[in-house]
Image (cartoon, helix red, strand yellow):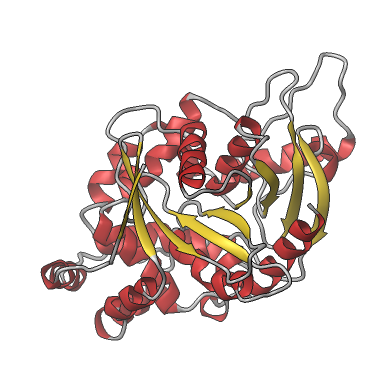
Length: 376
């Protein structure tokens, strides 16, 4: 495995093109409904894009990313971008943290000081970008699902000299982390999740009967998919169709992504109270400049074609598992349902936060991660 240092730099021509496209947006007719009930709020989006044009600085984002050690690893034909921050103590615990969609590795930067600057239990943090996201290369052939990415992550950690390591993830990263624990239990010392993968289905024998609590959850999930899950169905079935529009229009891309941040984060009605405009636009601009909308959402289709988290008979995550449940998270299974497939050793109810835990509540999330890995 070849590893080379990497520095983020975007040509001025790309930033000029972005501003030109924002300025020349053809806006749709406003919805007759108020707020966010029918989708992205147009008034908010226009305010956000005006900020994008006049105040947001991608160069500051580049400087922040480049303040950490960035690398590219060549693995199995993929170029994997990752940040690698080491703790100064000899007994530092290697920890690989995986993002999801519509997030990115950028979400995890706030966790770095919490998890590396501690002498009692510090972590060597490895924060990669999933293939098709950020500065990692794009899959050029079918089959790059969560199980495949888990094999890339194991090769990355092994290549860095870590024979045993911890795993953390939310959203898609929770599915990749689960695959890591299933495929490499001899290497994974513990799995910490802040999301239970939506495609997770434990194996049920004919005589097994779901509890009332489990049946209630499955109905809640079905209702949520009916009212909120259109994006997932589209990503998983016809991702290429929408890509033509959103890889061409930065405001269209922004509208698609920001609606998820509004719907899934733990704010009080004002998204700015939880996630700043600069944080939102750093993530959205990353998608735009790397042209990764279409390549990122294809992962939904790959996982739909090969549902690796529909557990077979005897399949079980044997390594110790922790789950941090944030109150504004997407529908979450009851513990009894999760324990059918995961070796749950820690289950904590968080006081605040939603789906983007590392960005919204890095202190709470890092405390829960540290608490778990102290025990394993």
